[in-house]
Length: 367
Image 1 (tube, one colour):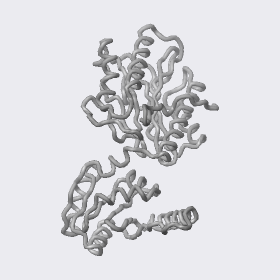
Image 2 (spheres, rainbow, N blue to C red):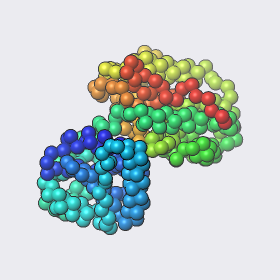
Image 3 (cartoon, helix red, strand yellow):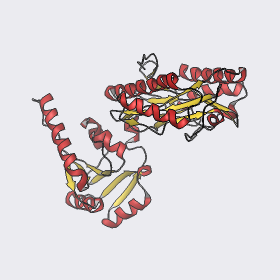
């Protein structure tokens, strides 16, 4: 729990105003409390948590314990600020109660993280002005601190170990679902909280679908298998894609694989502070275009990663956002030949002060 995060957020709040937070990732980022289905309301001087009865005692114990820990760590400093907890079956009623008590006049919320129906219901609870904003917390979360980077790095290490374990066990005659289940069981035994998304195991022609749903397909000799997996560790995610060959590789498949590797390497070479996101996309795209395969690359080059598996920045051809130290994102070029096969290689990259680091490279796993 990093109170400096919400102190930064408070600088954006005016008198008589509050920020309503309903997204579970944003709430975890600000509070460290991993549960969902509760709300936060941050004002100029206070942070209210609106909790259903089922979560109240757990939240109370969690924040009491964290406050005691901070008191022991910083005995001579000013006592840490407390969250103010409200309990009730109806969060809309609790919200109305707080804004009446605090005499709030306006509420700001992140536009893409709350439904229109919820906003309509909130407006009916009490007459108050609502202002949708973009990037209130998304921009804050985009730059990771050392603690967050360490959690993401460990998450990436676990994902890479999952891939190495898969190489050890996979063989013709197994099904996609069987391999996915084996991987997920292994990853949880290694310390992952859970998988970050449903593990994708795509054999043969199924690899030509960028978001294949893992099925009961049985692997054959000389099949190509695309593996896309990620885990959650200490609340932070990872995302890794590799290709496994179950036998001989045709010259054409080898050519496509080397081309995708070259595109990723060319993108890596441009990653440093001050460079526009779209330039990183272009560096990979040019490799594929010059080879005549750009039309088989249908998605963005990557996405930010952190508490959520998809965050800012999004590595598209039009994003003019400038790279900054502390940004963490994937680089995942791919080529998908319809009705034949697909190749995608994905790694997680951290932007550093002078360049970048790939967070899931050079790791030795015991499998």
